[in-house]
Length: 344
Image 1 (cartoon, helix red, strand yellow):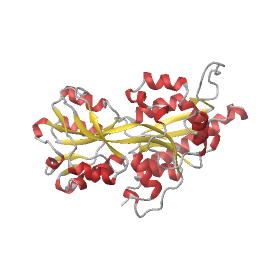
Image 2 (cartoon, one colour):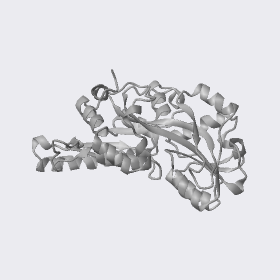
Image 3 (tube, rainbow, N blue to C red):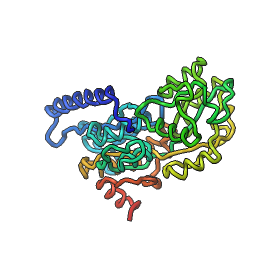
Image 4 (spheres, rainbow, N blue to C red):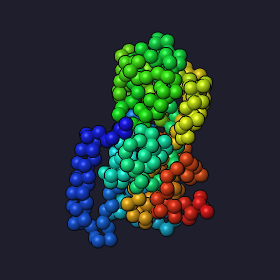
């Protein structure tokens, strides 16, 4: 069954939309007709993950509100009159639905969730396909981390049976992935004491010995995992063998990933899984605006912001901008990538 957007998420977005609409009216009274503000939301994820800080950096980079310092002839700026903002959310499942329904302008989401929503398959089986979804860019690979307290003696996914485990919150792409992993290993969340928490609160419970293990997905390195490894004795579980082979045979967007030894204090090399993260919009987004946002994402100024900001920003590269995108590109983005020489 599809995880539909939770009511509180919809309510928050609706309230934000009303506030932004009111702000737009106020702004338009003091701005000229040529300087009408354009409000643009980027739905991300929990504030403890990678989506939110990276989304904030990108939103800042592509923004150029009315009254900003003029962009010089040899400079590259954000989109004229655009005011972009990152919004925290429950994650990929809620995000694709919010974009499709027009509640937000854009969102970050896992590649597998994006394709499943567009095609009405997987967790969206039985619901109308979200055919308005359009690709803007592939961002970076998200890597699965399965943290366990050393004292818990958990050495494999099957050892989670009977343990206290957080598998992320409803509305997240990670929860969908975890359930797929459990099916591959022939276990079920009902065989453990399952919690449905964001990674931040879950890590706090792990530290207080109120959880034995948790699932988290993010870019490498994960600041949350790094901080936890510095202050507590943890293991990262390896995912390999026949169950993972079976999973990869049926999930085209999952790939094997090796976390190098020393990435986290006291943790050796770990075999795990990864999935691409994507920036998506609706086909209803005006073509020129999508084009301008795409060009702003890949200009030299944004490159500097990404390289100097969140560590995962360095992996947001033009050469991989179309990796794993299995839904149509927005027509404005398609024109952008042709002009940039990525598409022929």
